[in-house]
Length: 290
Length: 282
Image 1: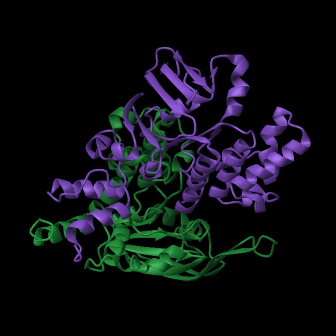
Image 2: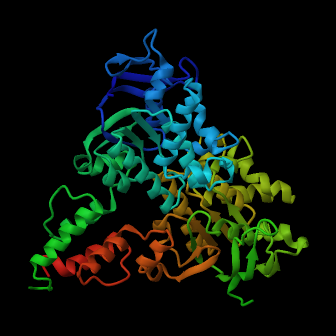
């Protein structure tokens, strides 16, 4: 399922004193099966953008096409669209409301009017995807779970709709390292094993470097850069201007080059840098001055 | 209690309900005057519970907590303790009560019955200290998350505390907001000698602390300078925590036989050490 934004602009509170253009002439295509990171400073328009992807917001100007069809055209079944393009908001655990984990996850599929058996199977599958044991947790109250577990249940609620595109707005915000790694692993599994297209809003350049195949940098409602991570991380000035940093590995590469060490241009993850430094070290015979 | 100690936690055990699991188990620690202490721990480790014990929001089941010479279980001292040990929480939006920044900062002072002129002086000084003077008349909801947290810090500062406890106060901020808030706290610590207790699960934020205490399963699992704590990469990982990126990279290279020294934390240190081994001029 591909998503295309054609000259999309969005204006909040148009015509009032608070009028603000949050998106300005955005053109963007996301292909089936991509893992895209959407980055930018608070207020750059990324949350506004993601709400356009499943029709929650309708562009003031321009078009959003899903599989070539304008989703805001008359007669389009937007409910079906939202099943296909699942959106996980920031702090999704605040949206949990049911008495049990099972009921909460079943809420979406039940609204779709699916038969009970199918609903049950989907709940099990969704819990399986987010590494929550059905036997152990299905009948628990979501409010008795830890923060990380609550977030996984909330994500399962979106997965139970079996979307082919999953949009996540800062899915790891506020989680500790273990919670963060678990969520990122779940997303990666969905991408690799189920071929779900991933669009993830993230502030962590190190996570982006490690996971995404493409990154989009937004600034003041426009797209300032878009391309493979290894290309975008070369544009250090632009990233700084966009209020983003570069991954720690890129910072180290820059410093080492300043000191005269020859390093390839496109090293950007800790693993790559580790391997390259190890190689250089071995070439030197493993001893200083050799 | 020595002159240097401004918080003393003495064999404290805490549970939320009778019969429930103990969240803190026989914890003892001392916070020194003027210290920047980072407390690390994964979600559910007990670190936020510990924070709330430090200014009497919770009272210990066993043991005692003494803040600036006052026992938190002495009800007569509760308000004095909270004035001496101010607290900043995670969600900036839950801490703002007024519709204008300077009124929000005034809130605590009004409750204390501080005279008007004194109040104005303190509010101005507090906003100045967090670099928010220019936004004194703004509406808080027009501020960024980092700015809101700085207003919350100003609200605490106006009470003229000796200790500020920040409980995951950057968790909901973007990288720039996080940097702003951490920078303000370091400056208050450096320039005004404010004692700071900084609770976080962002390892990088603890790198500049004077001392780190790692809480796990309700007990102190590790304690030391950032260099000492972050050298223990394996232990930190078994505690479900990370180490700063450079400490992790140095550790993995060391394991593969590259003779890098222990204790590397920053990009600058890593550059220096790698250069010693690999740069052409060496």
